[in-house]
Length: 600
Image 1 (cartoon, rainbow, N blue to C red):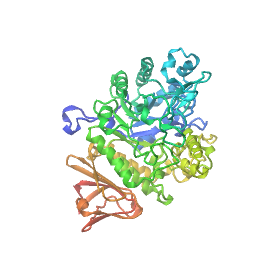
Image 2: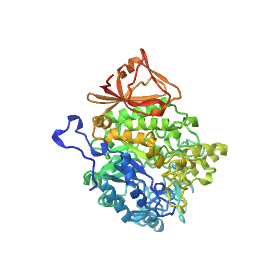
Image 3: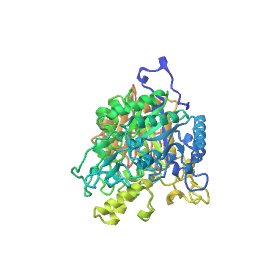
Image 4: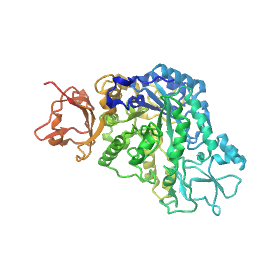
């Protein structure tokens, strides 16, 4: 069994810690294996590369690693199209390499989370291939096959990747299969009991290999509400978003209870993190104390720049105030119901957060603003997820043409924008900015070697290395005590170290503050008589906080500031308030201990 962080038991616990769990006190580091570390020179990251970098991840302070899919796959969506759930993809190594990674990580106090993709498979999975070969086989029932209407698809659903969610079955006139994502990723039919049992067996098999748990992909999509015919389109393509018909549909709770009872509930200390956008009034069912999962992601802040239709080429014109309200609504909604969430700004499906949240001017992107985002993220209640490279401030890459992008969704979005009649230059600018390849460029380990230390000298990276690796890389970040990396380390230490701040950072209630001050995200974390304040000024000018709200800041200790010594702010000084206001500097972020009176 994977080693867990120490959690005292029973009678010595404060009554407020009765809901204490090891995974609440953890920090997750997400690895996109294809881009993390290549050890054999083929230009593709591998499992041995993750093993080789375990000490780096441990040094950051993370004690869980979520690995994106490493299963056998034709890679139409780089691993989220699985053709064999039991076998590691050859490009990443072998099953034995994975077992070695699990064991080595365990010896260092790190647990491994696997990505569980069970809404769909690859069209090259043996189940789907058997379903295609024999319409009368049991495997036809493992997926959704439907008759069309006069040669057209059964309905006008739009897939997440653009175009119809239905694909014609070869050599079967007027027969279609459903794919919420690409046509290479047919959706599984969770109404089929035999198919479910096969998935349960696979999940239990992996748990027995010693993993710490799963991140569960697209799990809210497994229950479908089928319709026939054309409904009112919501776009120029004559299609309608599939979301309202396959996300959190009536009957999904029965399926999720069966999943939990037959898998996760059978094993002690397994944690589950669901990719699940759950309405606030249903949170307890999904991530409450007896919920289907331990925690979930909320997409609203990460996708604040995308319209409901999902069109990257028509971005929303969001504001910092809207971002603040979204983040704090998520925080208070989860805690009000006694539930738990995972907090994040980046993952493999996003662009880099610094480019997203400071998008208007290139000069706004700096170590100061990167530290600001880290302060806001790691101050929140919930288990934080740090995506590879986020901790050193990696940024978007700008490639010269659409042909240089690998991401299937980037190409789908580009094609849709062109089909909508937009100027190709505008479409490329918008789509390349939002491309998932921005977060998938190779990890920047050093600033000296040609490929940033990602691969061997003769290796050719599968995706171009960002040219800024000369100045943004792990080696330089580790050597610089004022780097973004060390800011992350200090923030993580406040959550995980054995000191007086741990419980307020992990379990403290989130209380929004200064919500009427524009372009400021501020909140307190309160735990009994302990209280800390997180302040972040998202603008290039000072902002005054009214004394009525800031008076209690006088003489309090600053725990963390994103202004280092060279910027003229010592983290050991106290916050001073004038007669009627307190001034926060441009792009300044602070964490203030409101409990401790700092000595004069």
